[in-house]
Length: 367
Image (cartoon, rainbow, N blue to C red; front, side, top):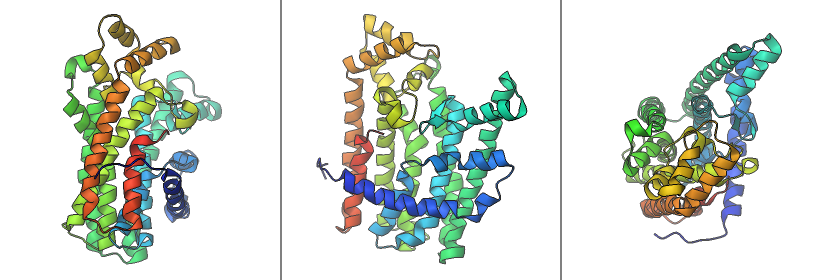
């Protein structure tokens, strides 16, 4: 099934926004939030949620549920659970990457380092340590909260407890262990002299770091929609593969936006991946293709935390010159084209149409 360029993103975004509203209503009205204490943990745990995000994972879970004939409303607690689960990974990821911004605002560890200084008189390393502690603990609380949201599938909507246990078990083992492996590899690959990853290894890392949670979202939505506690229905496996592959392609596009996007639009610092020396597909292609002065210019910024804005701009120009952006986009495009064949098994419905458009949006978005 080939991708057709269309103008349906506006309609898709309206559909996603409507589902995001329902998911966030459920999150903010959930009794678990009121139990988060003391105030800094409560505020930190809600920080990114209150800023809002694209909510692509809960949306595709709900679309997957509807695509197999299920009732989306029944899946709302799981969609809320996956959004909160994803949020804890962001909080911890920002600590790992030392990122200062998320969604245009200070990251949790940065905000609470500042508040530790303002409210408790902490200075220097003590303030920074306090910010990291609050971020780690808030993420831990969010992870616990996400499991309780899945618990609501049975207690609030009567979903088969065997299905709920299956989903929570998969999230706590298969998903989490792969996600942690992907995050570890991402950090290790920044030491390119020691690890020297191949393109296949980078793509496998991205699947574990990002694609696996999208895969779970599609799988869980389809299982809830079908009432399938075994997860063995063909539609479940094919929707999961579709979502996981598109989720990996999403990360490729995210890496592109991290270099050529605009902070005012993406809400994240542009050039941070270059300064950190992240071995993205963009960086790998550039290191393969850039020679002479171009390679020197790229390495003058790549992996240098103190690289100037001028050095980052020059390195970005090298990326463009060796067509690293086009190459990465072409890989993402082929991934989504292949993924679309997975959902041909589904009956033609508005839900399937939305999934197809969602897959294309994942690699054409600008934020």
